[in-house]
Length: 138
Image (cartoon, rainbow, N blue to C red; front, side, top):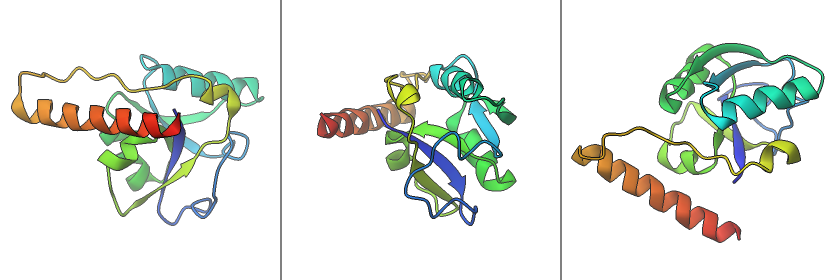
């Protein structure tokens, strides 16, 4: 599953067609908590590349993280399927080029209350987006 770098619109790198972790070395990162594989793997990979990422914000909610990116001009990393669910005019999505991170089939796991109608509708829609997008990549 492809990871995307999420940048605020107007960021100096927002015109790139893809980005590497090496190129993001001097950026401020807003990250998922280490309870998520993605939070762990990005940080480990940066350390393996010779730098400690400047993690300025950590949260378990991707919507909160994206809001932080847009407001405080940081960057984050999210699975590409989130792009279809979270459409905003103030952020840019750019593919992350990194074979080490890409080898993990990274997904977000949520603790939504599926008895709640709105959560169930959102979850089903999100799940269908993930499945259809993943099948087109195979």
